[in-house]
Length: 71
Image (cartoon, rainbow, N blue to C red):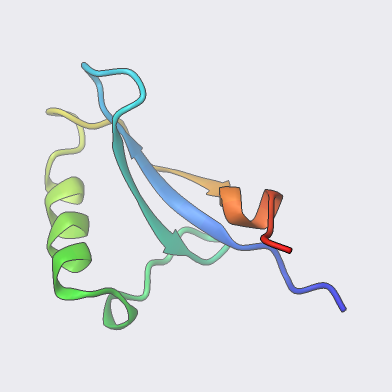
């Protein structure tokens, strides 16, 4: 049985390649804030506020765990 793909909303740093934030989301990029820990929720809100200043516009991508599931 195969589950549906898992996605993440990724905010990449504008100034430090390889740095940024990623949050679980649906295929449209909607993040379930209630499912996040308090720390992750604060990081998500920070990342949204920093788009265009320190972070690029977020992009939806298939999460790495969906590409390489643990066996």
